[in-house]
Length: 269
View (cartoon, rainbow, N blue to C red):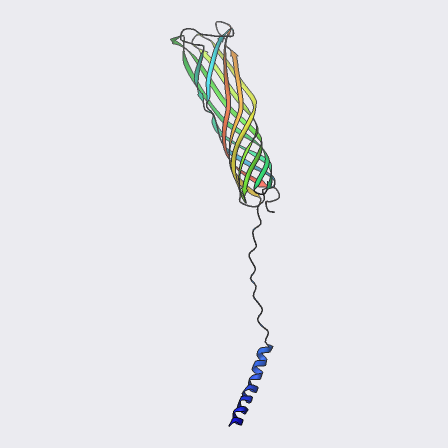
């Protein structure tokens, strides 16, 4: 019986050897590797750029205050004190232009220079009348003011969060202003002055810029621009010589603009 059991066991072991050998000869399955997704390259603001811009501008209220003189001294007569207010100019309008600049990024800090130039039509005009000597007589002043074009040369400094840049800006500003004034009264006197002049001053502001592709960015920006003041003086012609009109005007503007820039060389590290 034992001999029979031992023989059966040996037979079954020998029968299983071919299957075991087949399993040993079969190659092990190759390991499966998954590739980690590539990280998007960081955006860099460093480089030159060119672009276009456009927006709206409005002036700080320009009070039209005039002084009338006779032979250089303030002229007073009756109810006319020699000086008076003839309303307030509130120029407003639009502009369009272009810009060129350069940025340099250090960590999250972005520093740069930008120059721009815009054609504009920012204007207003008024005419006002004031009592003159007695209620039956009066003096009338007409004024108009227009900003025809302006430009700036500014430094920029900001903080970048990858494709988003928040910045402050400031520098030099200049612009062409046309300013006209006329005077008439019920006594037959009249006068006029027309001035077209390039003013200079300063500009400060700030903005937000976003890079929506490696080469293209869009921005929105506010600027406060002060172009200084202008004195207007002109003689009156009429029955008596020696009368003249003088006034002083300050030119201060706010602008809000949108812009589109093309970054030369792309924006990736």
